[in-house]
Image (cartoon, rainbow, N blue to C red; front, side, top):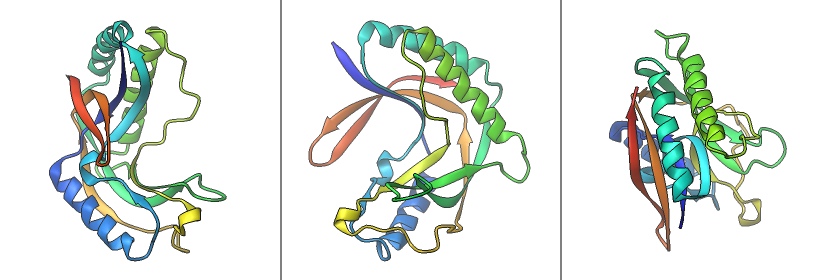
Length: 191
């Protein structure tokens, strides 16, 4: 039996509320976008896709080792709106993550954490991720066929506070209609 899984950091409710407010304001200027439900927003560290339960167990063990090696908890600043791809027709609108004022090495630590997770996944037998890791929180998916276009000023400044990186979770994604996917925590690893 296979399960659809991913590895992510859960966001706190206060940040989820700030994202909900941000999305409400952006809805007024961007029509036709498919907005991510705030309760479904998380910091994805690695999408695994459909994997069998044997591989899931192996990945779960490797993740525990990788997270332990990442060091103590830290925080990232949730700031700035951007788009993927950055050139041409944007398909995804996101809010970025950056170093907080008091910790210039936080993004480097996030990179170390994500690299360890990638290595655990690769050791379990999965192919390596081909896209570079860019930490972000997805706000919406844009479809120009539905008239959704980003604002002309794509360097939109927002500052939503801190995202604590204290735990990493292995999630199962349960595709439900019409409400979208629901997520079940399979394992949790503390930094």
